[in-house]
Figure 1 (cartoon, each protein chain N blue to C red):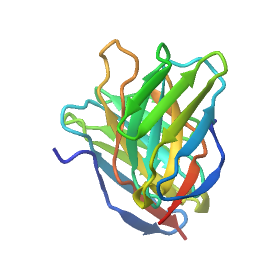
Figure 2 (figure 1 turned 45 degrees about the vertical axis):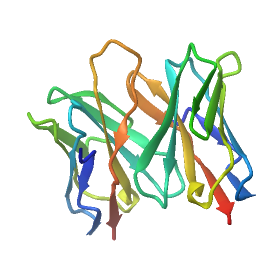
Figure 3 (figure 1 turned 135 degrees about the vertical axis):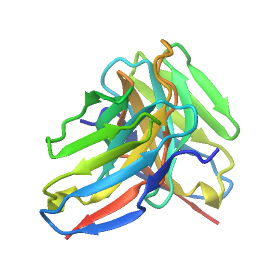
Amino acid sequence: SQQGEEDPQALSIQEGENATMNCSYKTSINNLQWYRQNSGRGLVHLILIRSNEREKHSGRLRVTLDTSKKSSSLLITASRAADTASYFCATDESEKLVFGKGMKLTVNP
Amino acid sequence: DAGVTQSPTHLIKTRGQQVTLRCSPKSGHDTVSWYQQALGQGPQFIFQYYEEEERQRGNFPDRFSGHQFPNYSSELNVNALLLGDSALYLCASSLAGTGAPYTEAFFGQGTRLTVV
């Protein structure tokens, strides 16, 4: 089963613009994580936000979490062509990750 | 630190055959989880190994089995391959037993399995 659902499913922007991805989930969580995947290869961990946190920053990434709405958003600022990838949110269920279907971001030079 | 390594990177098998995929976790990690990712989908949890035991399992048939060795490396075995088993198989390692909420998992580059 897939818990997190990313929205939109695809996004195309110009280099330098900001990209926002949203994730909704169904059950209560301990934490929510965002991953990036390039060209169908391995997943790269981007950021983890715990259920008692509302916002977290890491470089050009900003993640928010609203547990009352069961939603999270990932903001990538000043996007680069190298940010072109698929992005997944994942929630933990007893130390296993439950992923959404992912969102494909294309950053055009 | 080599991170999580998986082998082989690509594999082509015939329907009905058996396959073994291998994973070495990140140094210092003791837990290995396996995921199956079909094209255009998110990864699906197969099972997780800790202290050489299967700790939990996703909704996959018994044709999928695994093993964890004393050095924490792991194998995923799939018997009686079906065309639908074609996917990217990902291994993730983490450190368990800390009592804290689940910490980040590190993924390998995956094994692309094609069943023909």
